[in-house]
Amino acid sequence: MTAAGIYISIPFCRQKCTYCNFASGVHASSLLPRYVECLTNEIIARNELWDQAGVTAAEFHVDSIYLGGGTPGMLDSWQPGDILGAIRQSFAVMADCEITIEASPENVTSAAAAAWAASGINRVSLGVQSMVTEELRAVGRLHDERTVAEAFAALREAGTCNISADLIAGLPKQTTMSWERSLRALLELQPQHFSVYMLEVDDDSRLGREMLQHGERYHVGAVPREDAVAEFYCAAVDLLRASGFDHYEISNFARPGRRSRHNQKYWTNAPYFGFGADAHSYDGQRRWCNTDSVVAYVETIEKNVPAIHEQHSLGRREKLEERIFLGLRCRDGISLSSLDEEFASELDPSAHSVREHYKQPITQFCEAGWLESEADRLRLTDRGVLFSNEVFAGFLLEQPG
Ligand code: SF4
Image (cartoon, rainbow, N blue to C red; front, side, top):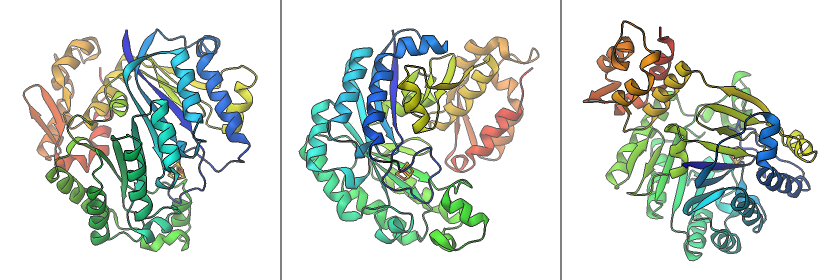
């Protein structure tokens, strides 16, 4: 049996961050218990619901579970245990399963940390974003440096030693000095994993809409320029590498042995199944996703009807393109010979290999210093990481056949 991941979507937040464009929201507190009940029902009735929707999947065993959001850390302390109980009832969960919960630092009380550890959660991903209070307040976050330190202490006291911290480069009011301060203050707390994201202001976020209207709310004028954000990111790469972290994916850095098993599934063609509003699934052949409306999700599942609103079978060419651009996100890059074996029939008849078929973008990006090729492997260079979207688009434009 293949190992799969399970993603649990908890799209609830206490307040909406100004830069956020996720399908998460601030909902009436009475909706959360109904939502959790629907989640457990959806997981337990998954075969019946998937059958109804025509996406019956083969059997898998589960080696990673990820409770993401939103802010799953705001669940009542027993609710993650109820959700995990439903997963164990419905799937074969491996004994060494990586089980992660995302939390905001202010959610991590001693009681919550103890309840999470007791339910089997063995990894916590903290949405730190910054260690500088004025940057956090500028985007609507409620914690500060002390809250972050207290969260680390509570988790370790409860026995959770695998802690990841998210940081965002490009928050309003961020400077070279304040960015370095955030990095160094977090390093002192010794997380096992970092995710560092470069803020791309989305037009659908409150910050993005304000920028489009040339408004002044949400500290629009204090958003760092794109080149400054790239410098912040490069400084993080240098500092984290020098501190012993393995830069294994564009945005992710791990202590040895602490790569995120779950997130690697998204980049390596592994299957995963999502439950909850806006949860996405992939069984190796098809992708499907649930409605992104929390209310519609609850009303649908309460009628014992699948909440799947979109499904798509991947064509072979589409799969090849995905394998290239998702694989290039990983700093190990892609093995061209494995792609040759798997996708020989998709290549241009005059080309005998993936390397030949994609000769134009490979040559162009290698000459630009954005890609490097070593024996069988093709990977982004450090500089190429900053232009990854252009590289991925170059491969997509190169239509096979
Ligand atoms: S906590 Fe996360 S999901 Fe919620 S509003 Fe902020 S960025 Fe969006």
